[in-house]
Amino acid sequence: MATKRQRRKRRRRPSAAQPAQPKPSPTALDGAQRARSARRRAANEPPSAPWGDFPLSEIVVFVGILLLIAGFFVAPPQGFVMIAVGLVLGSLAGLELSIREHLAGYRSHTLLLSGAVGVPVFGVLFVVTTVPAAICVAAGAVAFGGSAWLFMQAFRRRSGGAPFRLRG
Image (tube, rainbow, N blue to C red; front, side, top):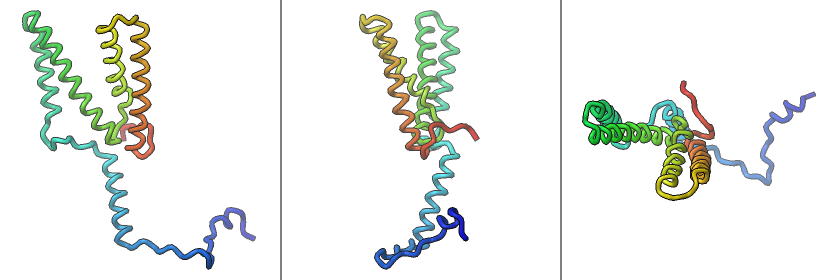
């Protein structure tokens, strides 16, 4: 006598009321297999930059490092500006890479990107308005939390449901 598991595994014959579904053609299967293998291959490779093979991010980081180092040797008013611009350029290059990797589903940078939303919200409210500091912190935390949720949902859609992806 067949067990419950064996009975579940048996194929049921289509009844006369149900028409048999046509099988997909071999070319359709081949195209679907190619798409699946391309997605698997793309998940293991970093996303390419929109500008192709030109090393723009690396050049921006290099210029930022040069400005940062040179700012320490230049007189105070211009030196401070050079240090600030160097830090901003390096940060923007890293942020660009993390946005590209996150939205491609390659690596999850949820906390970094959420911090890039929450910290400016706090900073602008604290510097520009006369709102108490506790409210500025709360607004920054709400912006951080909301953007973290949105970034995680975006990564899950792009990565096939994974909330994060580790190396390897």
